[in-house]
Image 1 (tube, rainbow, N blue to C red):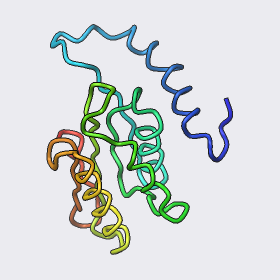
Image 2 (spheres, rainbow, N blue to C red):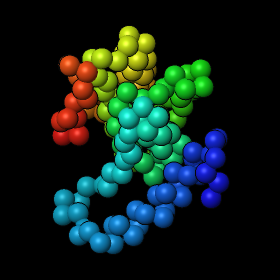
Image 3 (tube, rainbow, N blue to C red):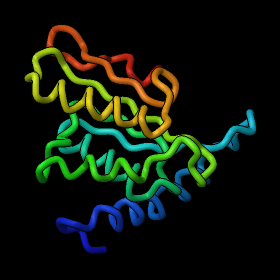
Image 4 (cartoon, one colour):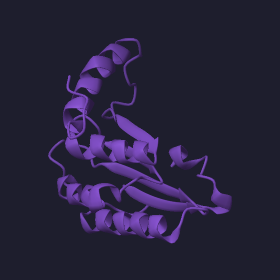
Length: 148
């Protein structure tokens, strides 16, 4: 596919179809009957990539872990993608978004992540259930964030 700037949606679709079906064939079926959650995670520009996966392909990705995400990229353009997030999503699963920063991040990073957290709640996601934001002490990211 085209893996150049501006083609994140196509990349994440290609990535999903090239890997997930094959991987699922090697795993046992879920015993609990719950719907499958597929997510993306990353730090900094990888956090932005995880956000792009969730917002550009919500029918494929429904979890995103954003570690100090570069949401200021392109003059804050990632905030425009908030319009694709909905608590009453037509794709059956409410998205889950976990955001964290380290305490050594500057105030701008903290402000942007707090703003993203609040705007996700404005879209109907519930704090602590669908979306969370944590600022880890001592400049490190929270090692237990995935356990939430």
